[in-house]
Length: 154
Image 1 (cartoon, rainbow, N blue to C red):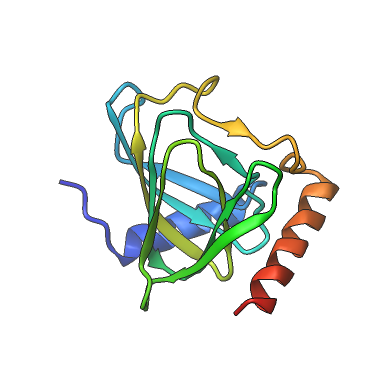
Image 2 (image 1 turned 135 degrees about the vertical axis):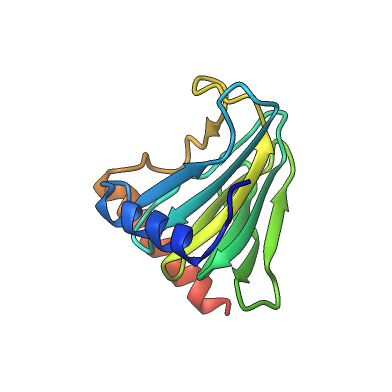
């Protein structure tokens, strides 16, 4: 049994701070398992490029902090956004297969993430061509634009 407790959450956040992507995964699963289960610590300056999964739903439950979950149409227009935080009233979100999505950390956050496995780096995600790549100046500018849109709508 692995406990999901404050110590693990803080440890994963500290690792995210040391990671150049400002994100850190703590995996509960082995890569070949049929269900992927993990903690995903994400800091507010971490940009997760919009993407979809061909045949995998993806679930995010916020254990610590506050995120915005965003759905996009196929051209990159935001069609829905939801603020999810550990204090509620919205605690989580599920994205269906082939839904363009991203999450934006609005504070230091840790989410419990679940999706269908097994993990295959080559086929796991289809990245949006209309969104900049991660770890680029353009990606950081895009993240700032997303945060402004989120702030304006909340």
